[in-house]
Amino acid sequence: MPYVRRDAKGEIESVHRTSGADALEYLDAADPAIRAFFEQAGGPREESEPSLAVIFDAALDALLAKHVLSLDELAPDAQAAWLLRKEERARQEKKRYAASGFVEIIDDSAFGSLGR
Image 1 (cartoon, helix red, strand yellow):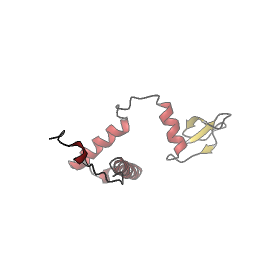
Image 2 (cartoon, rainbow, N blue to C red):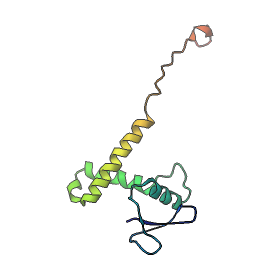
Image 3 (cartoon, rainbow, N blue to C red):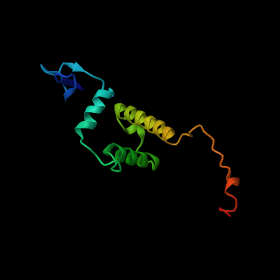
Image 4 (tube, rainbow, N blue to C red):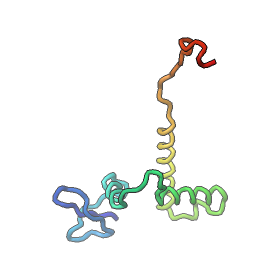
C-alpha cells in the first residue's frame, strides 16, 4: 500500500491496498500527496482537537516510559514508524519554540515615572 487512482486534474481520488485496473500508481506511504489526501478526507477539524495519532503517540510514550511495553515488542515496521514520528515531533517542537533571532531591548527611560 498505497496504490492511488487520480482524477482528470491529477488529484488523488482514492487509495487502495492493492493495484487494480484503476489504481496502478504506487506511492510511498510517507508521500506528501498521500498525507494531504488523508488529511483532507478526515474533514475539517478544530485546531484544538487532538488527532488520534497524537493521542496514540502520547499513550505509547507513557507505556514505554513506565516499562509496561518494550519497543522490541512492536513489529519492526511499527518501531520504525514510531521512531520517525518521534523525530518529526521533536523537530516540530524545536521549530515552535525556536528563538526569533532578534534581541529586543526596551528602553524605558523615555517613559519617565509612569512605570514606577
